[in-house]
Length: 137
Image (cartoon, rainbow, N blue to C red; front, side, top):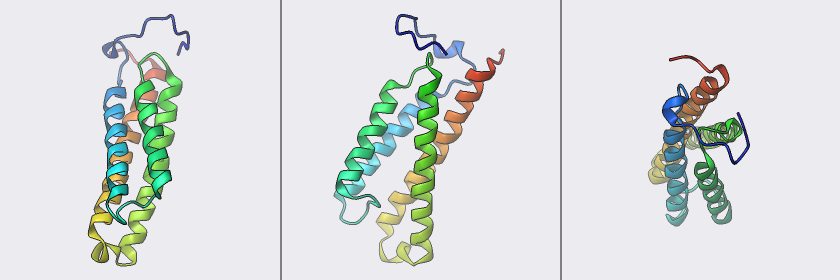
């Protein structure tokens, strides 16, 4: 796509399979869950600084997401993939060691984050595919 900042941003309806708005919302929801879980003792798989930093990065990427620039969708997809991998493996490890019983709140937060990241990854991938192929409607 064109990275020229003077080029008008196309309407999301002009880009087939554009799901950037949904990805943006999912990234912000994930950021909120990360921050909330950090304030619930032991519910976050991230430390305090890491949780705030992750939330800031997610919100910045969400804020920059637009239908005119392909690169930001790759960044969103990469963050979603990393989140799915990290939170999914953390939730699985917690499940296998009995963490679901000893700390169900932490397990639910971690599993919710993994699912949100998987959905964001799927939608970001569809957006990238649609933008790269320029499929006609």
